[in-house]
Image (tube, rainbow, N blue to C red; front, side):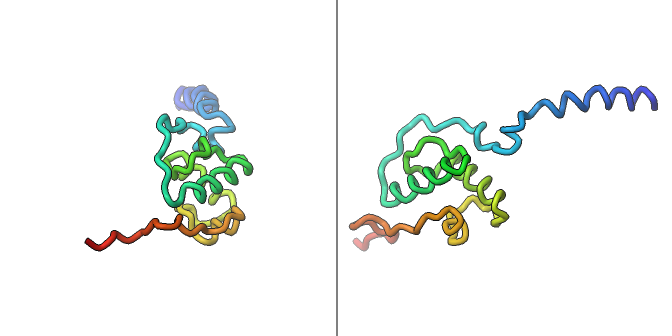
Length: 117
């Protein structure tokens, strides 16, 4: 029993140092930035605004490129957790209000519905 306790005491400091204080609070920083540049779309500027705001607030959303990729979504979820908003990683109205970003309308000519043939 004494050996088990000693063994546990020796391993505890190793596990505590495995994650740095920054990555334990900001796991989105561990996600690599996207290598490809996304194609522009109807919500590119809107997503860019969200990315800029997240970066201003200290959340690593990756490069401001208008792509709502894994890194941006992880940063958004961490922001939501920090503000006690349900952390779904989605741009709901409560999250946008906390970020101070207004919902954008799609660019002219863009449509969310498929065009009739």
